[in-house]
Length: 410
Image 1 (cartoon, rainbow, N blue to C red):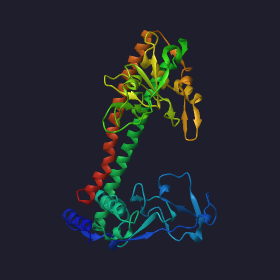
Image 2: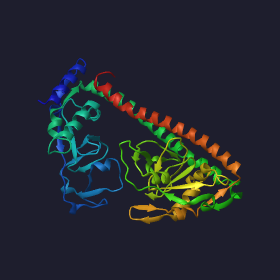
Image 3: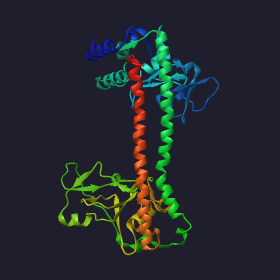
């Protein structure tokens, strides 16, 4: 018996209420591995005499289904069966709800007398069982994935069938409530994440905005736009922080995951950021190109080569107003139309960005709009963080309920 099994046995003895047994999982459940038919028999649409070959990915997406001849379907399961995903990530997924044949990446559980399928479905998701199986799978030399032999030796709590039914009913009710709360919070979070675009659209698509004069970006900026340094960075906290593409997020600068760089004095002066500098992400995937934020910090920093710095002429333009327009749906439309596409990556040059027509209301109006947007964005960010914390709490509830259930606390 391994050390993990001994600890597992002690834990279950301590936690099992009166009337519950502590049993080896293999004594109350069989585990049947899948089979892998040859790919040449695969079909990608349902046909007479064919059954679906279910793989782990099919439980989370349905865009590509595989079918095999019925005579090749040696191992089958139905929607009520509890299936185990042998491989990850994530390892040891507990799955159900589909039917058909199943391949070697799945294990079918076959409960014996006095073990209910629904109870087993929740039991295998219990945190200590999940942790034990995952730890064993990760440390087994020369092996990958969940091992049937370890599952069979695992010690688990087994209450009488009527108590199993009671636990299942309570867990099902709680999990359904958790899922409803999760979906409601996700919907609210999605609406909140759309607020910045809504605010920007309301300003730059307004009837008033249609009356504003437009000037190309080059006419309101100093110089030609500067590309950042390509010198290698380090994570030793030596030198100045170097802002990269990942440090620009939803119109602001994040000071997370910083890298540092040491530059000769002349180059440091060249790439050092100043208050009001606009940073623009020039290359990456299409959805990330164009991310823009204003540097308005009292700390020192330089910027990396994937970014372009624009400095507006202060008597003509407010940097936050200009950055807001670049981040707006209208700005995105320009960027997406002008970006150059290569294999796996797109980019847009400073010279192309200089042709972007920027609306230029009076400077005092730009400052007023920028201040209003700043307040709106701050409130939106506050709400977003609150909802993310709420969602995090909701996502932790199933683990709490499962632990309580199999400690006999429900």
